[in-house]
Length: 365
Image (cartoon, rainbow, N blue to C red; front, side):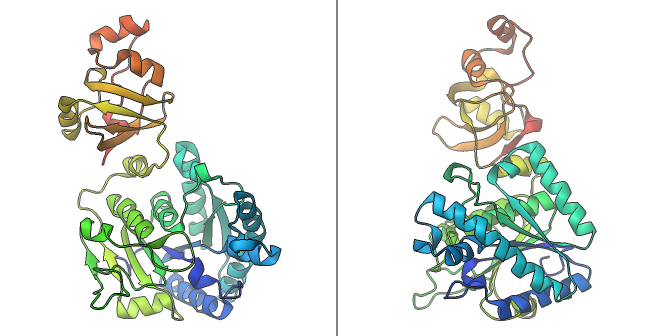
């Protein structure tokens, strides 16, 4: 499922790529490039999601706290480190006869539907040309409000956009354990077929990076919900991809049986909803039966959003039920909430749309 996926996304964390003195671990990186070349030789397409730009830039600029003392420091470090990071990957892959391409993404690039499709088209073309895309969050322009915050979830989102069948998160831990791995008796969980409360108890692991196990579990939920397999494995040793292929030691999250199609997967993965619609009990039942959200079933409208913006649909207890694109602005939605469809035209003064959120533009959670 993962080892023979036609298209694979591999995420490399900062703690693996960057040494204790703040430089690239070039000998280790050379073994990763050799592994990628071996996969490419077998016809597999590989996309790299690589951390490390801020750490590299902070070293060159001599910034305190690894370049994360302020947002401005992080942006400056990223702008400087992106060049060094891209060069390191280009040289390592080039030594194996592969061409690297750099693609920097912000959250907005994958939240806006048009820009999402543009990114997907770019990825598809690069891969068709035999290029290895190296992707990182564009921290030089991202603010706290428009950041992914970790490259684990970015890797899952890239897999959705790039049409990948599998994601491998290389980490400084072997995978998901039934308790913190430093505790005596901790047992590695080799496979997870459904994310459950056990996974939620695992805390952050590792001294570097901003991901931790919680972010990896969030990435697994995004990926598997869209039909993409995801694995967590150790990248500490040389040739980590080959080693994982040989040992299969790690945690595999299998895709959901009822995986969402591409558009609905994009909706479900959205991180920056503009508002919320609260649905009554009857509407919640209808949504779960595959129906649209009608104005009559809405008992609350929150936030400021425009037609076409992503909104979260909640039940009357505040539990998220679905995500979708609103057919109305927040002001209009508030005016017609609770009203029957035949009354909407008179309230708004124009012909109403079929639903407040149409089922074709909605993904259940």
